[in-house]
Image 1 (cartoon, rainbow, N blue to C red):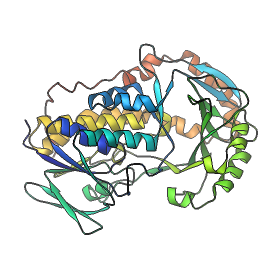
Image 2: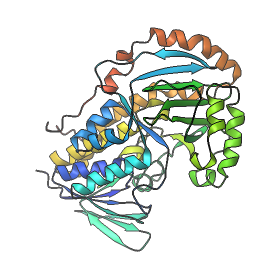
Image 3: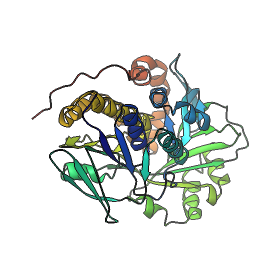
Image 4: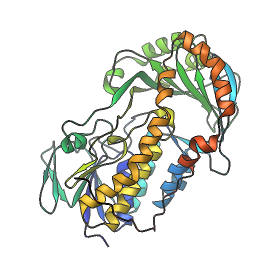
Length: 400
């Protein structure tokens, strides 16, 4: 068993509770410190979990809890300028799961608490002090906590990332703002199908919820960067006015925007990706989840990659006594996989904000491209990936 006995986990969103629960399973005490006042703070809209992500949740006993609150997506289609065509998919894997992010946060929190993990809220990290045999986290309220290692699961604006490396890159704005809503629609959408729609002036996606309502998410082209808090200072009625104008020529985008009520609109704010982070760890501090890898939402793998990395980190700390060696091994296991996912969708990010000429060309090219696509070759290695929790981790030597 590892000589690492305790971990401070900074961040209570997705990767933080998963890492803490996996660490508890590995025999390491983990405490989660979250800057927000509770486990579900209305951050984000829907989140897709791929089969590999849900299978990883089974390791910590959270898979069925998430399946119970998520909408299964069995097939996918694409729409370009309101013309639809089916997308090829994998066989022999469970469906994609769509879940509201706040609901997912609660499910992961409850699983962690049931396994003995302690959460502390209103704990905004401001500094970290490293010792020869441990690390102390200092919070804005004047409190502190000490453990053997510290895990930065504090999201795309990670404080831990800048403490590890003050020159670390920050997230890259994709030139789009995110929105989500549930509404009604006159022509029913086939259940279990998600459509990725490239409208005349903006990208959106839509599907049917189990209760029959239409769910949709918009990636609104927006030159000016707006944080979540900035975007939420704009009244929802004004955002809906803009969304109705942008999607006015699209079917069913126009109707979904028109039928959405201001109180049902979820404002997500700026959409980002994380460029490759040079340093995943330093001393007794390490990063996981969106703090170190956040692929575009186009990938459908952001949440699943965060879940996988959290569990793999726990395995490394379980089996390797030395934190530096454990962290180096963790990075060696994860960096090629997460950067491969990011590279797969790099070009797709630009098509979401394409102009009218490019969209016209997409209408001709994309059906042919996807008709010839081999789904097994394209993303079979992503979705069929499974972590063997019981297998011992073989350490790798840390780079100088």
